[in-house]
Length: 187
Image 1 (cartoon, rainbow, N blue to C red):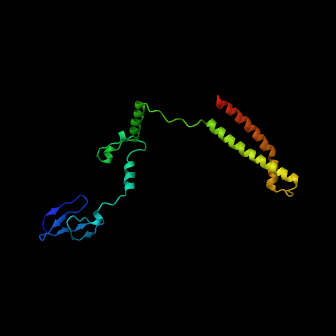
Image 2 (image 1 turned 180 degrees about the vertical axis):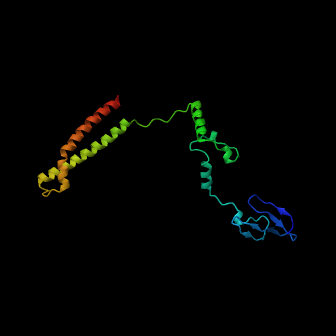
Image 3 (image 1 turned 45 degrees about the vertical axis):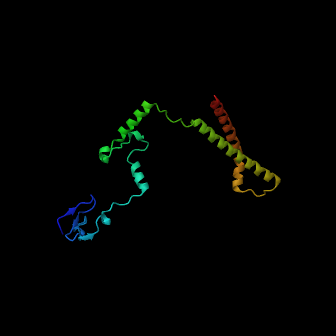
């Protein structure tokens, strides 16, 4: 083999051109300690173990997105081609920049979610609807007993009949609470 060596890339080993014009990859030691034999190759060939691994488009995009914290404005994202460890900033300093930018540009915050009173009102209305349904079931059960359709009352039916007064009291209480809340809401 001639001393003419050509370095093709960072990843690949040196190529040697012999006197007969053929290209060879000289023997070298692998990372596990074993030796690769000298291999005759075509010009421009890169062995499979030296090829960079294929990274799909989605993975590249995900890696690109993960370099910066979520929600970081595009203006603050660095377009320099410096190594990552020199570009990396602490999260606190990035958040300070974002806060300053919001303060300077006068960006208004998102509207507040509905007040908990309206959520309570909705929950109370839902509970009231359920209690009224249970009370209707109790009335239907009483009618069936009075008409003679039901002669044998099961344990669960008996429990429903006993709960009638409780349902009525809860309905009255909820109607009072909802009435008070709806008046406050309208003010």
